[in-house]
Image (cartoon, rainbow, N blue to C red):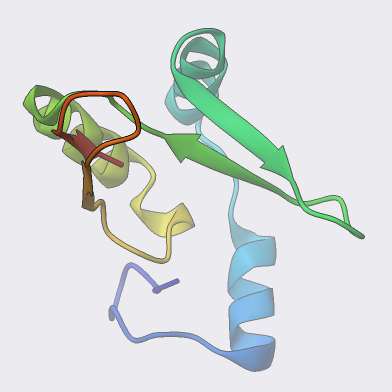
Length: 98
């Protein structure tokens, strides 16, 4: 996770204080509700009240959409979007943006 102002990785107490200072904007809240009704998923963390939100698309063609979501939630994420190559498993080979 990075502070938007200096992009320096935060650790320890600085990271805790940074996370506590974050507040969702109305636009971010609307996006979360809308995507949870559609293609996002949320996973509760064991042993605490935190959750992870995952935006994932089935096609590489949605990379601009994923990048837009990353920019919108930049202060909340610790890693940039990535493309995952999926092979086999009874499905045709494909790339996913996550």
